[in-house]
Length: 145
Image 1 (cartoon, rainbow, N blue to C red):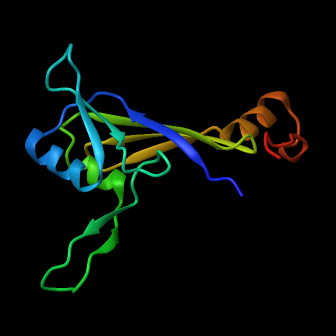
Image 2 (cartoon, rainbow, N blue to C red):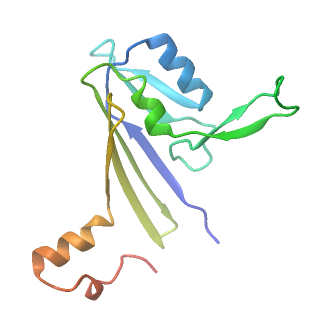
C-alpha cells in the first residue's frame, strides 16, 4: 500500500506579533519565510519533520506536571493560525499530493483573521462539471484507480 505524499505552502500575510507567530510555528514544525521583497509578510510551509508534506493536526506536548511522558495533542491548525493574523489579513494554504498515481488530491483553504475559513477541493470539479454540462454527477467517473 502506498502512502500519500503532498506539498503545501501558503501565500504571504501579515501577523500581529512576529515573535509569537514564529514560536507557535515552531511548536508545529512549520518553516516560516519572510518575503524578501516585502518585509513583514510571512509564508509558512510544513517543515522537514512533516512526514507527508501536509499541514499539522497535532503537536508534541513535553512531559510536565500533568503527565509523565511526551504525548501528542490535537490542534485545529486553521483556528490557531487565524489567531496570529493581523486584522484584515487572509492566509491561503494550498496542498496537493497523491498516493502514487491512484489518488490525486488538492485543497485550498483561506483563513481570515476573524477565525473563519473556507475550503475548495479538486474534487469539487465533479459537481461543477455535472452542473455546467447538464449530466448526472454519477456519470462522471473519478480520476482514480
